Length: 253
Ligand SMILES: NC(=O)C1=CN([C@@H]2O[C@H](COP(=O)(O)OP(=O)(O)OC[C@H]3O[C@@H](n4cnc5c(N)ncnc54)[C@H](OP(=O)(O)O)[C@@H]3O)[C@@H](O)[C@H]2O)C=CC1
Ligand SMILES: O=C([O-])CC(=O)C(=O)O
Image 1 (cartoon, rainbow, N blue to C red):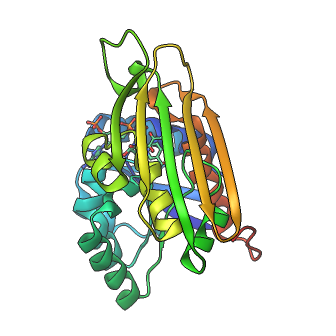
Image 2: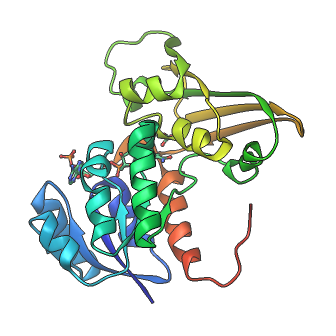
Image 3: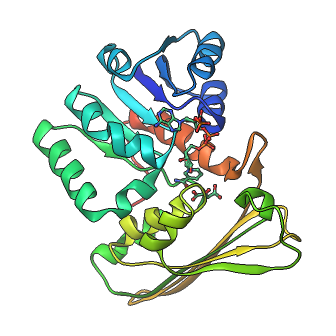
């Protein structure tokens, strides 16, 4: 069975712990040591107080479910410790130079980096953008102000309109999906981010046009109970990715 080390024991980390299938969680790390200790009691894994000890433990894959900052700080070290890496805070790869460095490093070491589909549907066939023209790619995300950590918002308000790599700098906890779309399609993504006090879901509308025709995808996600910024679907997607890593058949492009 594949063994994993969980980097980040917050909302997604705990959903992984409660729902994981086909993998064994053996090591935990969080910048709040108490969270790793508590999580360790739930899954019988060892909680580490420092990153070096966490990475020196024997297991196959680090699952990052912490922050863009954590992904930036630790990705290279994870690979250098001979471990594959699952990155939930995919916004880290909006930095093209960093992305190139990390993919080059993974390639030279023979390690893999996995990006879950996260809080959206549709990444699979969007990858056709790597071999065929996509002429329009727009993500319109709408969340309740609570999910965006905004206190005062009486009516539907556009917070951002522009490109994904800029949006993620302003909203690193809410627009990782825009960077996942960018990586899948191999092109820039336009983003609109809206706060709307009348919605109780995290809504992602994706508009795609290209040589294939056109597609519109609307996802109305339930926020996670412990972190409304993060859709529950995002946590389920990582549980599913881990379950499938060891399977002989791969479904979806
Ligand atoms: N790809 C996608 O579609 C999606 C990605 N995400 C991203 O996934 C990540 C996890 O989400 P979620 O579990 O809801 O977030 P939480 O904030 O609930 O949990 C993250 C945990 O990681 C800790 N942490 C943050 N930075 C570091 C660090 N540098 N080193 C060690 N621990 C750290 C946090 O501590 P503290 O509380 O002190 O910060 C917290 O305990 C986030 O980056 C989020 O934006 C979320 C939804 C969708
Ligand atoms: O969970 C979501 O709905 C999306 C999200 O926060 C992100 O992409 O960072």
